[in-house]
Image (cartoon, rainbow, N blue to C red; front, side):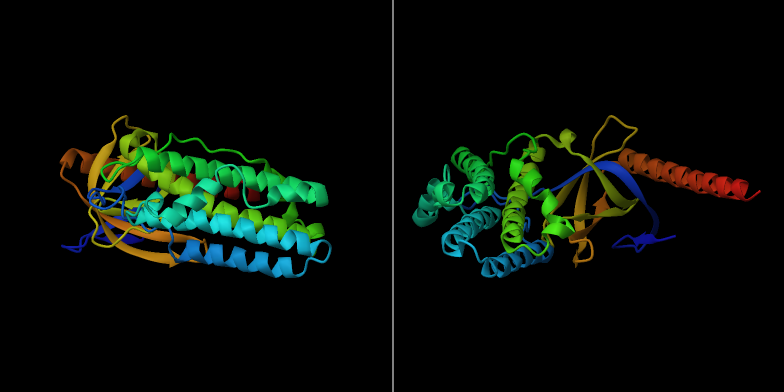
Length: 323
């Protein structure tokens, strides 16, 4: 069976995949710059790679548009610029820099609160295409408004995060079918599809950042994760990367226990897993409470027993079907 190695004494620990509620956050965040930040990398290689790929695909398909290209192309580029402005603002935030203290960026953000570029001009010249751009506009302006509210309500000592509520956007439903083979070679449709994918990349980063800020005050609301866990540490795939050397705090809620464990944690290693398109973050535990460690040990043993019983049951069923 696979094992973890505890950093100092190199003790071997059995590990197993488990579903548990988990939230890992820096215990020593950035609070001495322009705005409160966690010091987490929200633009690791896997995320940057997705953004670059979607941007490249979008530009490539725009070049193949034939009808009304002179009208549509400038608007596509305005949406790209707006999405990248959101990304630039989020990048600054993650580093403790406040975008609204930069006059040029602040002006651009305010321009994107209600409208994106000249999307409205398409309503007359390309009404059917306008519907898609209009829904993308609604999505982007929604996140710009949330961003501005957070910036105005935050300081260098605290960041205003919103409660967990995933917003459903019509553009996501409208473009879902564009992955079907029938639409694969239509330049305008593929351009619209990759435009929404690019916008989604930056919106998802906002969602992840906001979630991390919100859960610092509400760790009980973290969701179930599939985690590879042992008595000495854990690892999981995520869309962000933790910074080496940054002290961390892990909130762990086992399914059969009401109490949330708070465990000092150290980043063991991070690596980009392009096969699954996420970052692998592995952590070591530093247990200050022996009761917490005992609870974790018992839960791991129980999970191993449950897993063994599942295997035995599956084997019995298979053997029974052969008789």
